Length: 155
Image (cartoon, rainbow, N blue to C red; front, side):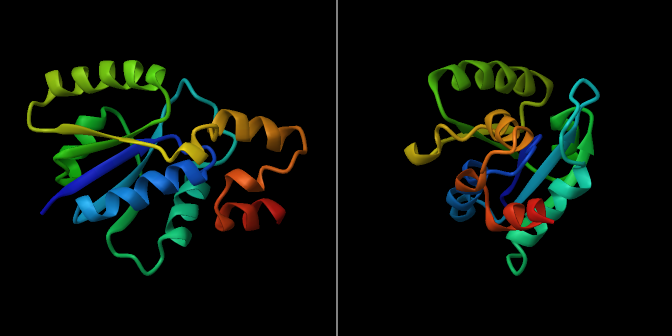
């Protein structure tokens, strides 16, 4: 079985994240969306909320599962049986940063391969940091967000 981990903060989940997952679906039997807990980051939304968004977006699709994890990504891959790490790339600068992480992960575990997918051009400007800023300042972030996220923000 081809199992993949798509790790990230997903604070909040954006259309860019959904684009990467949807285009990776034909490549893998199972995609775990791993919501990483990083003590250095102070997210706007709880890990439980972010996990719930993925559950709502992919309800009825048994190939996508979301979970919260802490620690090394390769350790979590081994816990769930994932041999692949999925990462989305928007710009060349993303690749340079992601390659460094992929090289470190490969050093830690040679059996786990990182797969890069480039985002659709229409989503390249969609960054969680920008979306959070729009939300914090009372702007309309809906063009960047899946319906499940928009619905919960209106509550």
